[in-house]
Image (cartoon, rainbow, N blue to C red):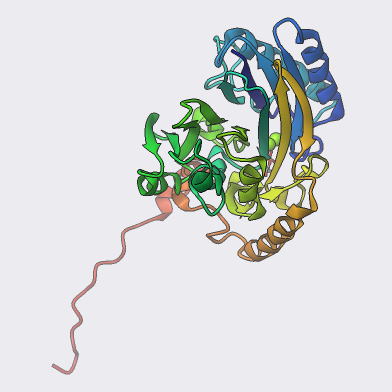
Amino acid sequence: MPTLSILKADTGGYVGHSAVHPAMVAEAVRRIDRARGDLLLDGTVATCGDDLSLIMTHEHGPDAAAVHSFAWDTFHATTGVARDFGLYGAGQDLLSDAFSGNLRGMGPGYAELEFTERPSEPVLCFLADKTEPGAWNLPLFRMFADPFTTPGLVMDAKMHAGFRFEVYDLYQEKRAVFDCPADMYDLLMYIGAPARYVVHSVTSKTRGVQAAATSTQRLSLIAGKYVGKDDPVMIVRCQSGMPAIGEALEPFALAYTVAGCMRGSHHAPLMPVPVGSAHPSRFDGPPRVVCLGFQISGGRLIGPRDMFDDPAFDRARAQANEIMDYLRRHGPFEPHRLSLDELEYTTMPALEERLADRWEPLPAAEPRVNPTE
Ligand code: F6R
Ligand code: MG
Ligand code: MG
């Protein structure tokens, strides 16, 4: 059974946090080319902003030490290129020096999905920069649970029973499963808070197979201080009992608001862009999403097609610019800036410590004495 893995890391930015240097991509491509036909069935390299993704098919299953250590070594090699060129934040996401079997908690993010290949296997790989894994909650809900987005839920007998959502609580390291449509309102109660609750996977109830996988690491929680947003990736299988390609892309026609952007501390619209435009510049944003479409055939990745390279997403891009103008005018005020409890997981504790002595109790209310009495 093949596995599709996207393993990604920010191993250095060119210029600042805006892109990956072509020499780093070339280094990763060289390594993938060497591993193809041996460790890997196939592989390709993609970028979104300052994040480098290794998109690979193989037969080792999810969380495989061999595949993860290959990615780890590749990220070290691209870090080497970044150091050589003095690129920004070289090795930013490699939080540990020693590799311990898989990448969980090591800094890089990954989404992996093991599947039996159908006669035709269309998949979408979404890569985002300047946001967090919970950014996938809204589009996943709309793809797999909202009939206004996905008429297949009503019209396709293979989808009519609905989908099962596996949700992670990133703060408490717990998980729960919600069955849609029956548990739809319970699901929304949680995933409407995407900083904490993140859809990790989606499974077809009719087919009993996994349809989507996301990366769920949060670097700030792993590292105990802000080291960058976790710039998530996601895999969605499409057609014949899964959302059609157009149903899976439809949620991105709205430039919905996510956490991310400047210093990982602001809300901003998510802009769907072609690969060549995935270089956040203004206010280190707006956050970007690209979508690479593949047909998988005998484990080979036929593609990619650049799915947001379509004028049908022009309005979402224009909308993102408009929302960005509006939010920017709030400057350091919420809701442009993230709420305090969100910042608590980033830079807030250090500030609070420095200013702790300045805060004193409010004066007690003295009873007022009237001088004429
Ligand atoms: C990085 C990011 C950027 C940086 C910002 C400040 O993912 O979101 O907005 O946080 O450019 O970067 P430093 O602190 O490295 O100067
Ligand atoms: Mg960076
Ligand atoms: Mg990034």
